[in-house]
Amino acid sequence: MMRMRSLAGALIGLMLAMGSGHSQDFGMVMFNDSIDLTNSYVAQSAMASVANANAKANARRPGSTAGKKALRTLGFRSDPAVSAKVKARFRSQLVQSNPAQAAIVDAALKADWLKGYGAEIARPNGLDARNLADAYTAYLVASWALVNNVETLSARSIKAVRDTMRAAMIADPKISRMTDGQKQEVAEDLIYNTVLVMANRIHISKSGDASLQRNAAKNYSDLFQKQGIDLAALTLTEGGFVRR
Image 1 (spheres, rainbow, N blue to C red):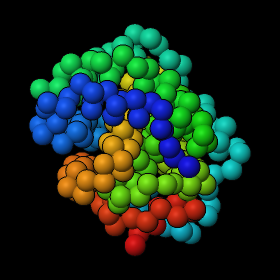
Image 2 (image 1 turned 90 degrees about the horizontal axis):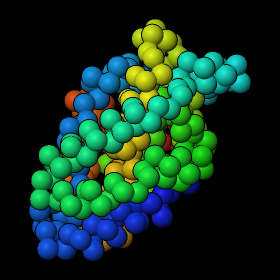
Image 3 (image 1 turned 60 degrees about the horizontal axis):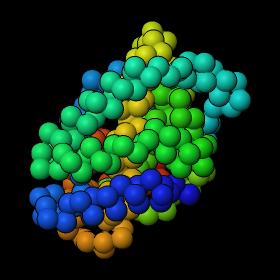
């Protein structure tokens, strides 16, 4: 199940504790409107491949050999300097999107979002925290769940999307030309945004606020629509994404 109760719950608790006087500014749901999937190297080809996947294609998921190749091609060694750069940029983007909430953003970012992602999202769902395709997978699935108001996801479905995403990105020659630093930068940017999506999902679920859910769904739906991907038109099955 794709859950992230402790880290995301702590972030929401922090927002509630510090931001009650400003909750109407953004309905207690923070968006990062600055993430640009178009310019993140491989978004168009890889994301479109997953969005257009059908049941038959997903049935031919890559086996162990492809998995080893994915690890070599898509994996990266982490550089603390790159992590610091990504975190600073994410902080700047969030504050720009939510200017009245700078103190809340700074307090929330004191938590180790990368560590929380690895422990609570990646590993429980068969994802590698240092794999570019897996970072795309987590962000895509989490965004799909928010847009479609789905609270529980099976690990098998997530792994099916992961396998399709890995295969698509292995086949992209641009990937082999990326340095570890480039892969890390794109992956960690997606990871921060995945944690943000999950925090939004958890708050919406706890609050039961239909208006917040609609606003959040529209925000993430619009981001993917810019890539020609209609998240509302997809169904997540144990074989991966299929069109409704």
